[in-house]
Image: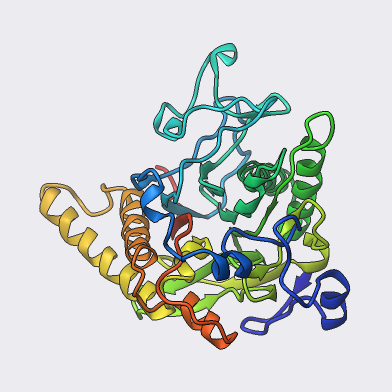
Length: 404
């Protein structure tokens, strides 16, 4: 684990980097090869396969599924997230392999709980429903105090027994379980990197023989807690490994107060957890603690956003979407008192608008994009956005009101 001050990058040391990675770009068979890696881009027209893909409709929601028999917390933290998510997959997600039972890709829109375990057809591991939602090879998870977005390395789909979507989802599932156990049963400060390390070990175990499935994934998540002060203030624990991103925005000022820094082995090869990768949470994950304020917005997003939109575009899109949602809500609910309308639906709208903006650039072969800019910095002549799975979780910090 690396605990660092805000805005100071800490990553793999140079000696570690060259000990674990080749200085040339990897071959398709290596663990570091990605579907968007350089060898593919240099031999195949960038958008050659766009028209052969089955169009996918964006998907939106608020909280992701939680088992109906999950243990309720003994006490609730003073702050919580009003959150929503939006997803766009560049291709339909692959079904989970045996012994992980899966539903069709529309399963997330079905009822989120079942009272008959024998009829529960949703994906399971160790007899438990797998938390979160799969989006192509990405996975997201949304709860009252924990949000995350993992980016599975899609090139594993070309390998026998390769399944990055399973890895990205399982990491989030076990991470969420460890977080719940710690928050609701311990008086110690949260240790999200330790929870991620445990989740990593559980995922390796679940995907080992006789159920051997290979994959790698980036990981990023935000855990909302509180300071020990009286009265308490919201405290955010942000964990990062790879090139997905957590961004914290203060809407009243229109400013970014924190964002994670991408971690790379080299261009287009981020740090990642999984099969044959040298990266581990305990050695490579970066942990930040940020005091935030009520109404601050936390965005968890995969590189399908940050490779296509610059930071100022993300900020403007979020601020504009929040204002538009307020206007629409005021028109629809003029007879309601303030606070009666759920903020979660507004966050879902914010996430959907951000996904739409990123998708527009991703599908434009002539657009300027951060991905194109990075490629040019590497001496490569690339143009347009980067078509990828696009996953966004938008969450607003709220203070829990005492009942009665």
